Image 1 (cartoon, rainbow, N blue to C red):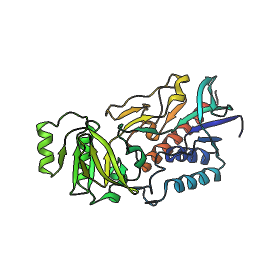
Image 2 (image 1 turned 90 degrees about the vertical axis):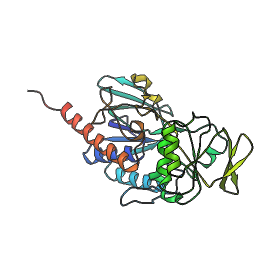
Image 3 (image 1 turned 90 degrees about the horizontal axis):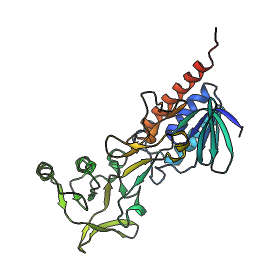
Image 4 (image 1 turned 180 degrees about the vertical axis):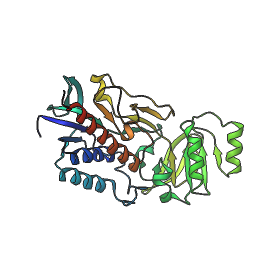
Length: 307
């Protein structure tokens, strides 16, 4: 690893590696810093990505790393602890204490899913506890599905998962009662509503078997769908005054960017789930590639000769 690069990419998932690939192919010196813990690691496969349907997430990352390295990009396993301005660039402090300089930054650190405090949910996350009907819906089709309400987005969630199964129960848990219109819509679609708080997700063997209510009764289910609160991984940007803010959808917190992926801090771009909370792998990769192209052009302009 060198002491300085034109671009440091923080995060090596689909967005980060696509941005790094675009930059490396433009003959930019690029370092990707990645912890090797992608959000989708628990999933069996990546879905909705044309040409790579069903590929294991870690295999997709491994292929992407090889492609970036094939054009001279460098990848280091680790984390970024802090970033501070330094002249016309930045000093990037790695978690192991090393510092590297960068003229530009591409932040693609993704997000953290906050699950309801229900015993059993976290342990089954990415297996039979799912969140996205487009990422996991086909795999859980026709099964008895529980939607655990976490907020307004859960209404939307229930309607989407109802398309995939005839046996869907909406557990209101600790959320407000449905409006008359919502209750009518659910009834028309055959969605059963269960009131009362949930005590735990029941597991038998190595599979979900039901939802245990605080009352003690157990409702048999095989799959749990839950809309998480999604929080951008961005604490290391505090030294730049760049912080995650509430997303307009109410789904969580993100780093805002303009149409090119540029943040409010000059020289810093962001792409993927760190800014677009609902981005799937394909759209995250596209955003990363586009941001990489924008960074390259920004460096071209910065190096323009004066007359």
